[in-house]
Image (tube, rainbow, N blue to C red; front, side, top):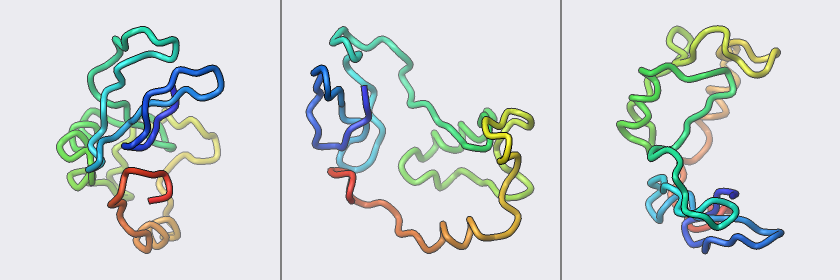
Length: 119
């Protein structure tokens, strides 16, 4: 199933398998069905990922403390929240030290509307 917007209906059709992945305030939702229409029996909590590698238990706990805004996720160059040596991309082994990513990220508005992908 593909994650859908808050207003999406669960669809298990051949070409379109989607289900809402967040509610209207952005809180992650647990799926109710699998792609084949059977009841979902997977994990209760959402899975978190990081392009730099697997998140540490401390980082996951910080994210779960505020899953909407991740305000407790305290990361930076000295504390990436990633388990060393677990990067998936051989060209992305550590936090960007140039400041470019931080500058770009700080210019982005925070999400505030979860009903469509364009919000």
